[in-house]
Image 1 (cartoon, rainbow, N blue to C red):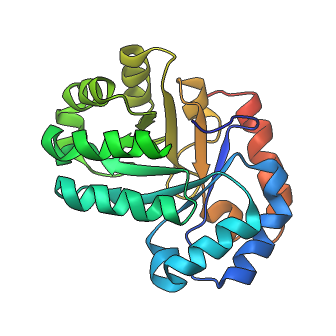
Image 2 (cartoon, helix red, strand yellow; image 1 turned 180 degrees about the vertical axis):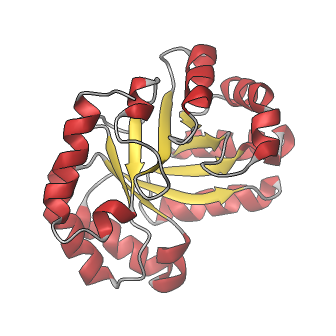
Image 3 (spheres, one colour; image 1 turned 135 degrees about the vertical axis):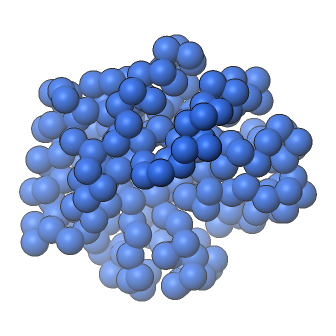
Length: 220
């Protein structure tokens, strides 16, 4: 589970090298609870660059690979990201029970958190159609939590009402995608995920502090 202090996760979707990424994270490291990395980093700095970044920063790292392949491929990816020092991974709920059961078990054995994506911050109508089934599946499998978009407060409320307080809800889409800061928390999320609004700010630390102020006084 992600240790919670500020309720803010940074989406580090940039094509920077390891040193620039580490320097940026160092400037706000005390203000964020986790760093979400994905295809930008994997394709730009490669697996060993990610490992170096994780070691330099010393923060909870969440791999947003939206993993949704067949079971044995999913298990392989989870083992590899664990080797890189990654703490958690986001998986597609629509991969289905047969392709999630083994990987979630492997992740649990390795101490890697699985967060199940059950709704998209834009589009994703098939996700929303089968929301209840996918959430129930995640509960059955024992995932650590769910990814629920800040742009759909009604979905956050529905998922929270289904799972209670034992699961972490992560909400992307805050800022550039239209989600209002603090709104996801007000509707039941544990963390709000912010990327471009902080990454492109002329004063990233000040902007991060502004987001935290809004998260601490959540409203819609």
